[in-house]
Image (cartoon, rainbow, N blue to C red; front, side):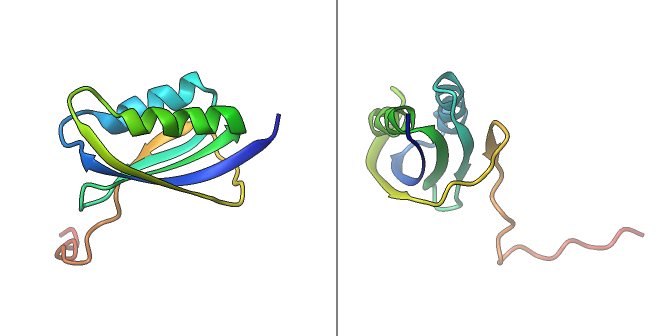
Length: 105
């Protein structure tokens, strides 16, 4: 089977649905590696690497979304394959508008 990596951006009303955790569980069932991240604007970014059929199944699942939310768009693009260990939920980088952390006394 051919292995691929896709990056997807998912938009919709997904707040409070545990969507990132569900994506991770679905990816693990499909034996994919990569990560999922929620941006400050609510958009979800997914990078999935594995057998082509399984990667496409993950994004098909993402299009349906959780019962408690509504996905309005899923845009995917191919990427060069990277080496990942497992599938993780990433935390967003700190906002540029956030005040700098104060040094410890």
